[in-house]
Image (cartoon, rainbow, N blue to C red; front, side):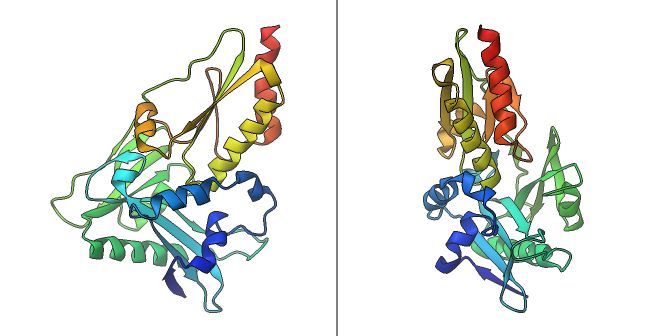
Length: 261
């Protein structure tokens, strides 16, 4: 196994989160590429894990916490760590230590840069980005937020724990129309897919629906909302993980449109 920094030849693979075999992933558009181009000069770091045959099987992306969606100082924040586990495409690379190797490489990297530690978000449920996995790697819980947990691993006693940034705004909507509020930061391909599906579904209803697109890759905009990647149909929050189908989003909008009549 070998851990490498992201190379230009791997950029297309990075933009689709190693799922270059997937037709569905194309729905995500170019949001991640746009986000990457904004963040690459702001300290974004990306590493790939290659197996003994040189095949890419995993990735980790992390950036200075000041550019993330949590509050902190002199820390780095892991947006995601992902080891390809599908049978399709490149195949299943999980259960071979790639995740641990990627995490250790990132920890060593940020320590060498001079950061005081590294933080991550994890789910308290037993699937992707599991908080329990980070705990096994020496991370300590800081705060809970719904099904999510904020964790960190300081490298110095001077480090200050990070904090969640809670929701600060709720969407507004017009009484005689349905309003779809779509917030998108761009870093997550799955969330970008949800955003594009919501846009496409909203367009189906023409003048009955108002679409409000919120670009939360601008940190000032994110701080105004306290939300990064979320979809609302009027006041109703659309569960966005795993990404809801286009049909499900369209059905939610249709229900609201029907009430207008």
